[in-house]
Image 1 (cartoon, helix red, strand yellow):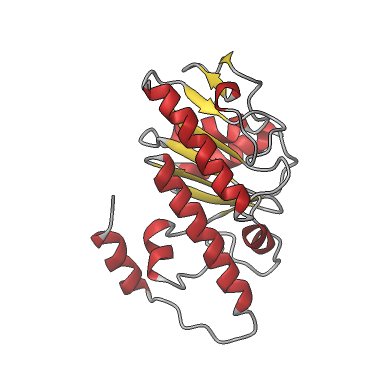
Image 2: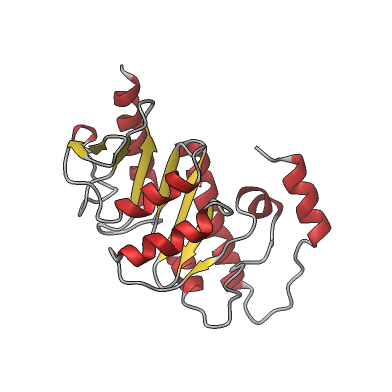
Length: 212
């Protein structure tokens, strides 16, 4: 099996897992993987992550031109912007996962860092999570807003929309976005209670120790 075919199968299996576990619904969410030639594979527009056909996954060349498969997600610019600002990224995952979206709708969250470091794994896999102001889906101003943060942050939270996470591989991006969703769920469960979170020195130590 070729490398591209392997990526297509991997995207399909990861997408189905996310869908079956309720981390995405309907035709929401999208996944991309960078190819060795500088192009990308992306999930198609209007597709359900629970029912992808590997052969119909969109292919874009290194310039962003659609060269194969179905038409790519209308949020392709979120992915290409992340890759532009983070050249070491091998994959990007964007979800409308329930608890992360719920946090993105809270008026009192810190836009510079939406979630506290409740667990070590959140500190290791996400770090700081900035909030991107609300723009309508497909608005190119959203790409500019994401781009202004992506060079410093591999994960961002879109206001009233959901998370976008880049990783060195699809496995890394998926692990990180799942950790983000679980931390959002914990944060909402703990609302109204006094939190015991990791301190700055503990976070710094974790990031030094486990920096990829």
